[in-house]
Image (tube, rainbow, N blue to C red; front, side, top):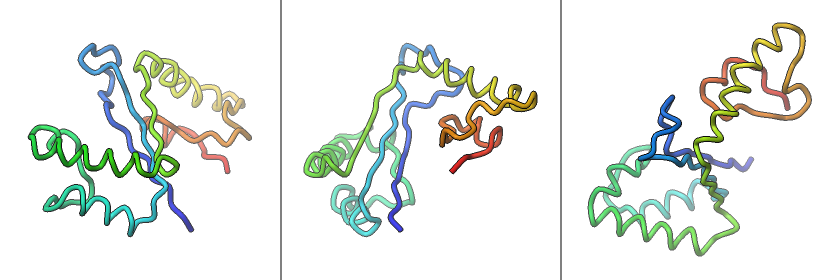
Length: 132
């Protein structure tokens, strides 16, 4: 079975109107794990760990060069990578829905029934049932 990976960046908790970080990003890859490991090893030689974090990588000149190497890899496979930049002001709407959904469900109305929706917010993961 093929696994599709997602990751986020820019999550600042309740600081949704932080002018220094107005964007939330979500990215996905459709690259098998062996190929992904090969790309990471080639672009970030010597870096170890189960997850690369952009903060430490982008602090130095070497890390920024490595990140550009990764960007070239992504650019060579545009059908395998997807990313979205979202203005955090729109996160207010999802927070409202995540807050209201359990209250509505307790009153017999499942806001997400039958729609195949999966939680976006980590806060909502335990607050509603996932539908296939």
